[in-house]
Image 1 (spheres, rainbow, N blue to C red):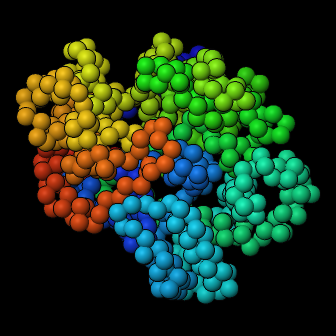
Image 2 (cartoon, one colour):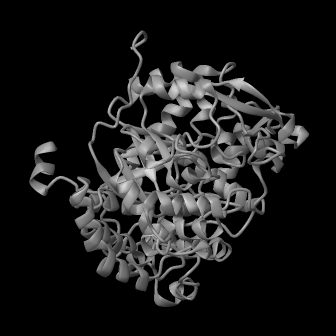
Image 3 (cartoon, helix red, strand yellow):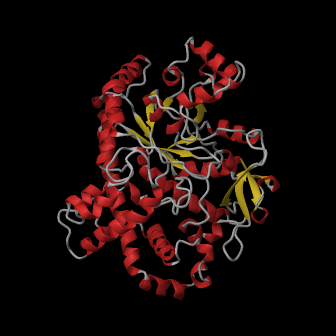
Length: 522
């Protein structure tokens, strides 16, 4: 492998999928879940002839609610537990779940979830621990077995979460020095002091991953694959950084020396200051690689394909002095490059990967992508700003691509068309020979007919929704990640859109294999 360039070809033929984060599913508990709420969506995907379901990262979210800034790269988000299963097993009663059932069904109220979910899980954990277990816990792993198998990350995360609660939610860099610096005696005392909270956190993770395993089994039984996402950077205030300080460019007190972001460009004259601590690729290469091996291993165990978020950062990345607080004061540094991907391929030879290569790419990043032959992304919304050579027009998007009408960071296609300038709308109408009355379906048809290996459609575009249903606006500090699909919308899509999507997928050669062929492939 040392002298061989790894190839990450898709090798799966033509297929289609839908993007919808778990949080956006309709359910009765304030957010979607990986239990009953997912089953109705699996029904839709199967009826629509879809092979893939793409989601955002599933880690526990904190301030800002972004799934790309999580408290752990390994833990699951307890908001996505199906609490009805806990109730059905006698671990919760109706009064315990009433506050969750009272939450808005059309939006995720993360502030309310942050306050309510831990208390609901504490009640369930205490009842389970006291022996009131009913028929709950029919997972493939016992609680004890789960904790032992996942101790490498679970012990650190559960202690981190407990200490964060004990410290009123403060970032770990603001804890007392003995806990901040992980002094053994201080940690031992904290484990005793916080034993109840640590148990609650571990219990919640056991439940989440037990339910998620059944989620994956349901997907496999229907011939549907899960397309997940791996953020390139870890959040500064996370168990990842607290427990693996040697992997990052940090000062002795844990604060970052340099942080991630993007330099000034025509999108933003001020640049973007993300604030994530940077990896010490040169000074601690072996430890960084080992940390990434664990991160990728966790993602590969959860998903059938993994997207490398901000792929450019592996080729070259913008390093901003943390104390400057100014993205314009950063500079480009050389990333891990081909050597890192040889390491990845050697350790994960059968895992499907996709490169998020949107935005301004350097020549170095383009070369790395092309050498690896890694599938990359194209977004149709980006096509209409200039002439025929634009790489996102359907006639320029070839195999080896994942083609989207838009992504979670874009406006909906209806919203995009409504806000586009008139020259862009004119190109759109002429290109598709359309009046522009149904822009989302013009775009759906285009990505489905394209040569791209995989076509992915955000659920909002299937429903024909406008800008008020946008999932995320980059750079906007609040109000993101909150949109949810209603039960009526899913029911209508299943009744009206699914049959048409399936017939169109058949027409353009994107239907999944027949069940008997699936069995032969296994």
